[in-house]
Length: 258
Image (cartoon, rainbow, N blue to C red; front, side, top):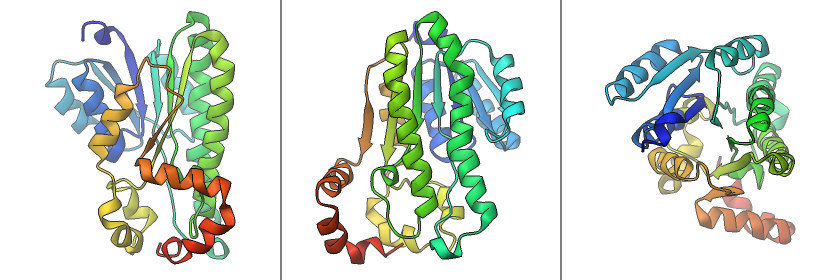
């Protein structure tokens, strides 16, 4: 715990959902926190909650898609020991009905924003020969399904970037991990699935954000390539990579329940 109190953990998209649970889990381990999100009111509420636990918590209103703002924020933050790229957005819609502004937002936040944050900490971590970058990807990055073409594409990009970065950073003593969760019971779906179709059909398969957060914080400082939850869904993506035609044919009805 005393060792953790000297480490600074930066979490993007920390105002609610998985981001807020990541902050709580990191707080429980004694890390010094820096929380970033677009909703400053929610950040301050979370800051008040966590500061009451005797842990240093700083908050910054910032949109990861705004490179200039992110550069300003990271200059103010200073040393970053752990970066958790959690900020993300999704819209579940048919590819032929996709809205240009929603497509742009997913690419800007999920891909460009994540890369920006990594680029802003990489040089300093390399110079210190220490640090850990944790990117929240998705099982959608392993296996795409209908009504999530762009979202799945962004998560495929996150995994591609993370895998390459991991190999590059291994020479500098910097750890890089991908977290690939299935659907999590968070406000994410209020926007991604406003009709509630996916949430209704996913039902009991929805993950508890607190448990996902605890698994994520537990691997800080450990050379873990990736964390896949739930395991059965991860197994499904591996089988799909080997037998794509069979899986898509057998699972067709389930895939279209989004």
